[in-house]
Length: 252
Image 1: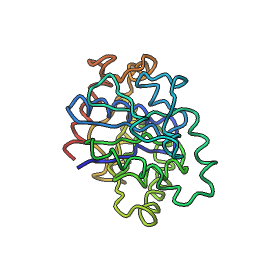
Image 2: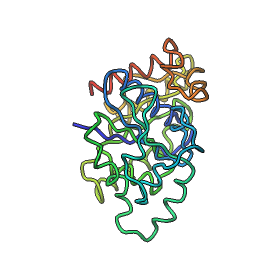
Image 3: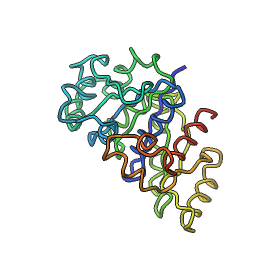
Image 4: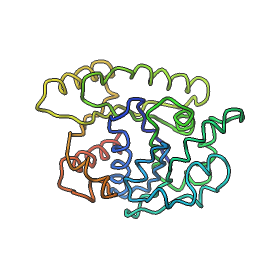
């Protein structure tokens, strides 16, 4: 059965897109069929998989407003099992144009419906805001994966995100669950990172994945080459971290 997972955190710079791109790639390398949906107008996931945004004839935006079929939007990637539904800056217009449209929160769910069962995993990279795009992602999803950076203020705002998930669950998507919390940018040399891990595990118990994604230069470099980190440098700690995380996700 297909699992549709939103990767979300309203804080920027927490490793959300890094997680979306590299978890998608790792799952594909573990022989899973994966669709990565770039649901962020910054479209960093699109760039991170080597797609030139200005060259896109159509993107997620055109699918959401009903101007394109999803089959016409899907792009193959350098990994055989990984497909991309790309975005570009046009996506900014979606929220404005949908203001008076009924069932605007279900546009992404309806768009994915014809193809979702062709994949083992559909991962949705959400924007760093609790917006209509994020709401669309949550309505379309079975669960939400939350990247949490191992830094000061990490837990701030998490309550707001969990509250949003709860509201979406009660109003639009009764089956929505929290898939878990993955700790990113982890530096085991610092007391602060260890404290964040302890706090997260104290508050959220078994929701916190055992695998921690290390702070790693290669993770930052890989997107500029349009590659997931496991294709850029498979021996790097970042690549090993995301492969270990993908395996843990498959077991959960």
